[in-house]
Structure formats: structure tokens, C-alpha cells
Image 1 (cartoon, helix red, strand yellow):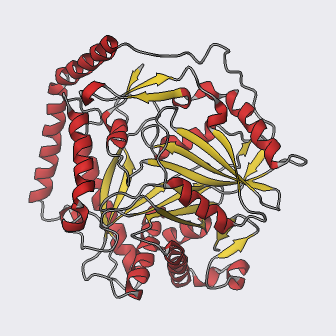
Image 2 (cartoon, helix red, strand yellow):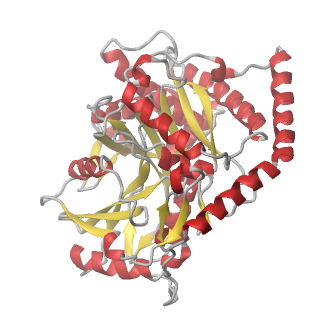
Image 3 (tube, helix red, strand yellow):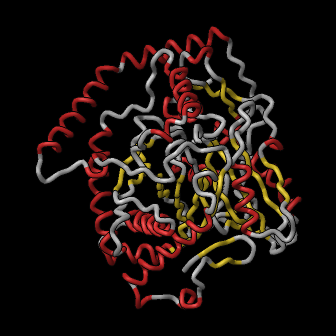
Length: 490
């Protein structure tokens, strides 16, 4: 039995009928020669069982505390069955990339089963080019973005020949803690949190000092944190139905844009997203006069924790959507991001991702349900307009049970008041972008995806116009579609 931290557990408490807090990735794999998709699914089950012990949460399920007095716990599932977690999902043949995206949206619209460990590989078959697609799904209570990349590395290899692992035969045990054990663990957790109050007070004092100095320094600001986000179509209560689309950008070109403009890769990606949102909202006359604000997750030190759970903060960045010139917009976004990083760093000393207060889980759960039932996001302003995340991924080619990974598109979470999430993961020489939205917020998600590609091309042609590749010269205005399972732009 292991206690979840507050940050991990909050993803469970915040779930409602319309907000589901699982994440994932859409990955394309080229099958080994002579292996059929159905054979591969069966072999993959064995492959994963050999290394199931490498990540404890793969065999642990959630058990909630009585009456929500304290955070939930992980307990090992003695009835664990790999067949519940690696399943074949046949698509109508010949399957296409559009079908794969639609299937991801469909599955992503359903809650996960909390009676078993909170992960699942949906292996989509039906492609006629020797590939399959994984929708690798896991609950956010288990991992954040960076921990998700560690998960991918543990469950893959860097060569076609799988590395040999051996899961001990007695590894999976059934844990069934008694009520007394759970209550004892809860009160121990509550006591330990109170005992550490002096250390937290020091952190709060450090943060207060840093923020006070920033407030009186004429050369510093609080950046987007002090701004009010305008109301947009993205900032309303969401429904359970999801929309999903993805695209691939070339890593070397994005990096080249950044170097030319003295900006980071993340600055460039934020500017591309800004251009996409500007195009999308301008088309319908919905672009507000105020600039849109983005919430960007950032990793923070794990405070001595070595698990694979969540340890993130959120910084607020001005997207300058009312600046027409992409180059000027990039420089402004860069300035805002620098300020956001400074403020987030100053706040880090007071961050506590494992708050433990009697009854806090029950109160958090009640707040989530109240927000959904009353439609709070429809009637009150949101502090942000959109979530944009950049997750560094593996730079070397990976293999799963001998199959080569060709793509690594993220799938993320829309929530009440933040109905659109844009996440990018790097892998080998690509930047794999996933746009996940509530369907009532962005029904035409492929239009927004095409706007993102157009914004990238516009910025690239302005910044590095003499280095357009031969592929780019031949590319159509919209996203190219490679055989079966890829949407890319060069």
C-alpha cells in the first residue's frame, strides 16, 4: 500500500462525467517481417509481462479512503490480467490515419475502469502497409509528461532485438488493507504534513520575499500572471465527447527558427500555436482584442520523491495573438516566457505537491462536481485560455516487441474552462503535435490543426526563407498524409 500525493490524487478527485483525466499517445509501429497484427498483439502481452515489474503502477489499482478523509492509496491487484490492458481494436480495412485519430477521440471520451490498474494499450489494426497503431492510455494520477516518457523508455527497446527481462513469478501479490490499516496510514500522513509546517513556512517566506522584491523593482513585472484572459469559445464547460487531431513538424527547422531569432524551441512552438489560434478565431470573427493567455506546465523538483508521479507547476504566458507579424510575435512571446519562468521559479520554494488536510479529498471532489453541475466556466472568467505543453521525448529510434516506432503523438486533457489542449512531444527528428479538445468547444479540430501547420510555414518562410527543403516545395497547402498513419509538414 502506498499513499498518492495530493497532486497525483487530485486528478482522481477532479474527474466527473465530462472531465476525464487520462492522457496517452498515438504511436505508429512498423511490424516485424512475417508477423500478423493479431499475432503481434498476443506477443506484445508476453513482452510487457516480462517487464511489468519495472513500473509498480502497472499492476496497482486505486483504493479510495473512507469518506474522503485523506488521499487515496495504491494497492497491488492480485487479479491482474494483461489481457485487460493490451487489446486489439480492429479498424475498417483499409484503415487510414483519419480513422485512427477518430478512434482515439472515441476511446478518449470514455472513463477508465478504476477496478483495475489505470492503463491500457489499444492496438489498432486494419492497415495494409504492415503497421499498427497504439493508443497508449494511462491515467494522469500515475504520471506527468516527463514520467510518461520514462514509461515509454521502460516499455520499449533501442534495438529491434528485445532486451531480456524476467519478472519474478511471485511479483504480483494481492493487497487488501484493512480499514484499521488505512486509517492508521491516513493519520500518519496527516501528522507528518503538520510536522513539516516549519519547513513550509521557510519556503513561504522565501517566496514572499522574492515576489515583494519583484513588485517594487521597476525593471520587473509579473508578466501574464497579472493579466486577465479574454473570454473565448475555449473557455466554457466541456462535455464528455472529445475531438482529436495531430501533425508532425520537423525538429531541425523549428530549432533553426529559434536559433535565428535568439529564442528557444518552446518559444517557437508557443508562437506557432499563437498563430494557429489567431487564424482560427479570425476566420469566425471571434478574435478578442486582448491577447490570449496560455498555461504551460513546467517540471519542478520532486522534493526527494523518486517515483513516477506528478511534479509540475503551471506558468502563464502571453501569446500576443493581436500581433500580426509572426517574427515580432515570437520576440514578444519570448519575453513573456522569460518572465513566466522567473516568477514560477520564485513561487517554487512555496510549492507543496503533497498537502494533507483532514477531509481535503472530499472537499476537492465536491468542488469539482459543483463546478460541473452549475456551469461555472460558462459564467465566470478563466485565468487562462488554452493549455500548451512541450514534452522532450526520446531522440533515438525505439522498438516495441521488435516493431519500430514511427511516430509519438500526445493525447491530453480538456477541462472545464480550458476546453483545448495542445501538446507536443519530440521523438527522433520530429515534433509530434496532438490537439485534444472537447467536441462542443472545437468540433472542427482538423481545421485548427491545418491552421497550426499554416502558422508554422508562415513563420519558417519569414525567418529562414532560403532554406526551404525540396519536400516543402512540393507540399500542398494542407497537411500531407503519408501512407496509412502520418500527418506531417516539412
